[in-house]
Image 1 (spheres, one colour):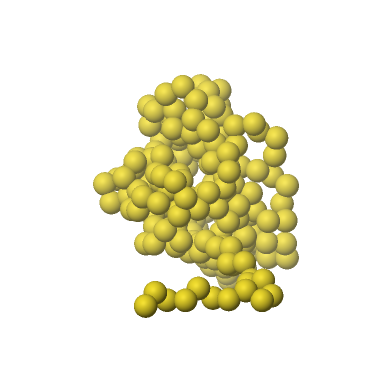
Image 2: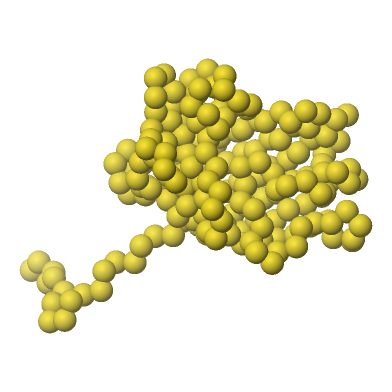
Length: 208
């Protein structure tokens, strides 16, 4: 990753990210930054075979190596996979809100999303440079993302129950209003272990 606008992978305990639940998009993005262990369950809600064969839903981790996709000609209507994610902050520019990068451990691809002041988001700093979706941050601290993909629509909701526990649900709606695919992810933040005490060091005594 060579994007000079990427800042540090913070944790909720540092700086403004300590605000919880997040009350604005900047605080929400700060809480997202860090390393995560993700468990995702995928479901096929409709009978559209093309939806079964497509890539993973936008914005979500790809299956781990060796994890089979959901095939159109078997009896599987759901699958689960684990992944380790690293999310970093993208610096704000102009009247935008900055954004996030996401990389799955073991993969070279880096996804990025910039959140613009007019309610759009996309992979480019310039909202007019490529496809975009729309974002809404609700008063309860949850973030809704909507992406239009031709005759399909993806709706993703992201929320935190704790600063180190994030939940995501995504539903794909097909032409005509029928559901296609859905997924639910539970993600736990990886928190660094405290440094081991050095030989000969003593634990601080409690005040009398």
